[in-house]
Image: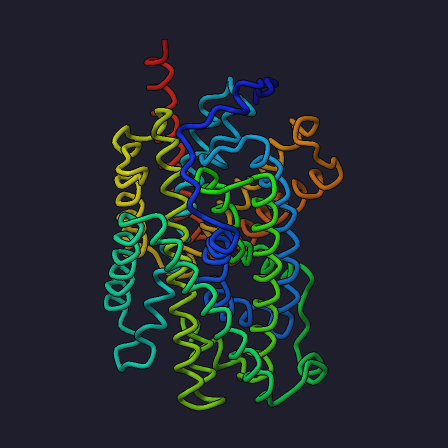
Length: 445
C-alpha cells in the first residue's frame, strides 16, 4: 500500500448534487432492512447444528465484531461524505493504489451480490415452506429470481417510493419478530440451564467460528452511507442511524435465537435448515405460529433485498464512474443508477442458480470480514483526520482478521470443496479488478 493520505480536496469531492429525501426513520429502516433480513433465518439452522445452545452467545460475539467494524465505516463516512462508501473511502485514503481501489470495489460489490442472493434464497425457502414442493430446488430458485425482479423494479421506480415501502416492511417485520419471539419463549419446553446441562462439549473455537459466520447477518449497516446524497446532516444521521439499527438487530437476533432453542427441538431446526423457524414454530405453537413466522421472514428478506439493491447499486455506479467497472453501469435516470440495479440483480440471480445456501453464506461472510478489515486499516491510517481511537481501530482490525482466518480454517478442515468454489470467485474478481485498473491507468491523462 502507498503511504499517501487524502487531501482536503479529496475529502470534499462528491459525485453529484444531494437530493435530500430520506429522513432518520428511512435511514434506520435501510440499515435494518439490510441486516434483519436473511440473517437470523439463514444462520439459525447452521449455528444450532454446530454449537447448539450456545447460538445466542455466538450471535452476540458476532454483533460485537460488527460494531467494531461499524466504527471505522462511520468515521470514514462522516469524513468523506461519499455515496461510494467502502470503495471511495479506500480510493481516497490510498490515492496512488489504483489496483487496490479497483480490487476492493469488485470485492464489496460482489459481496453485496452474494447477500442479495442469500436473502432471495431465504425468501423463497420460506415462501414455499408450507407447500408440498417445498424441497424442490428449481422452484425455490425461480421464486428467488421473482422476488429479486420485484424489488429491482421498485428501486428503479423511485427513491422516495422505495424509502416508504422500506419503512413499512421494516417496522412491520420488527413487530412481528417481537411477537414471534415472545410466543416462542412463552411456549418453551425447557430452560437454558437444562439445555446447558445436556449439551455435548462445545469448544470455544467452534463458538468463535459460528460468530464469524454470523457476521454476514450484520452486513447492511454500510448501506446508510450509500444514501449520503439523500440525507440531511450526515455527521449526526450516519452514526445515529447505524448504531441504532445495529443495537436493534443484535437484540432481535438474540431474542429470536433464545425463543427458538427453548421452544423448538434442535433436530427440527437442523433438519429444516433453510426454513427452520417456520417448521419448528408450526410444530410447537400450531399452524398460525408457522404462518406468522413465514410472514415475518418474507417481510424481513424483502426489506433486505430492497435495501441492498438501493445502497449497493449506487456504490457500483460510483466505481463505474471512476473506470473500474464497465462504463454503462454509471448511467443514471432521475439520479437512479438503473443499469447498476439491473446488473446487480441479474448477477445475484445467477449466483442463486449456481450456489447453495451455505456457500453463499460463507462467501458473503468472508468478503465482508475482509473488506471491513481493510476499512479499519484505512481509518487507522488517517485516524488523525477522522479523530478515531487507536485502541478501537486496532481491536477492530484484530477481530476482523481473526474472523476471516476462522472461516477459512473451518472450510479447510470440513468442506474443502466449497473453498475451491469460493476461491474461484475471488480469482475471477481479482482478475477483473486487475484488468480494469490497468485499462484506467492507460486511459488516464
